[in-house]
Image 1 (cartoon, rainbow, N blue to C red):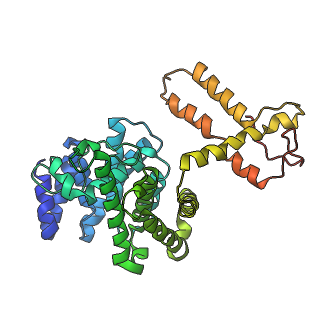
Image 2: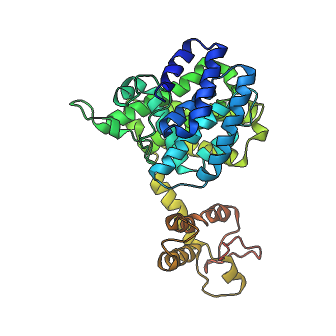
Image 3: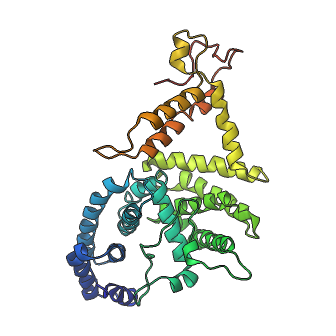
Length: 379
């Protein structure tokens, strides 16, 4: 199986039918015996096959692996090596499937990126490693060859794609400085793709993946205060708003994009506009102040039943969270993640703040004057 990267090296410069056929046979016939790194590289390489009959066979093979993995990774946010491995492999399979003539292949993967923390972190980490390869590849065992997919053993944390395990502090640069530099390089490179391709980028099968990857990296930069360096982060944030606008108004397939992706783009647009309008973007205090208003919103069922001192959404959320912490079992025979359940209880009613901003005002007792109450359901 160590011959896999040799095939890849030759394939880059000379892709005759015989070599593409040999690559396909190598991956398909040996896939179950490959380790995770080899599976990831093999799956990704199948996306490069160009001869129609071979590409059709590769597509069917990849589609089968996609169907096997999607149910495993879709709702799995566990920060475990096994889950990271599965998301890493799933990313390679999806990238291989996103080819001209299959415009719908990108949407399921991008929907996963914007809803699953691990998928998002793995994609950002792999992107940073790829575009910073001049530094990072010297610290990854490539088994004698070049690999676009970084080593699966490398963990990507959720706090903005840290690559600290590759970096060593120097007399002039801390690890944090180096991390910021490689994050910036990835942002700059992805932005350069748009500059290079111009309007043609809108017809690219990879456009949505490139766009969402760029946006998630910018979000990581904002959260990690990348603007504290000499990197002009607001410049790229401003340009990305134009990319979002073009995607929403000019992309031929935008109407077919899932609601999850559309909602994500709208949310990013609002956040980026707020970032540009605020010299310092204190996102955590902003969120805290925003959702502290839940203390003002009364639970609907108690108000409707005439309870004089109805509990607020904040009180309701805390009591349900406390019950979950005390009474939910740590484990269940059918398997579940108690932490995810508790996290969900904390955030399930955050949207009530938005309803409050659109609803009628509260009276001094904290109850809506209107009979049509926009209070939270206490179920």
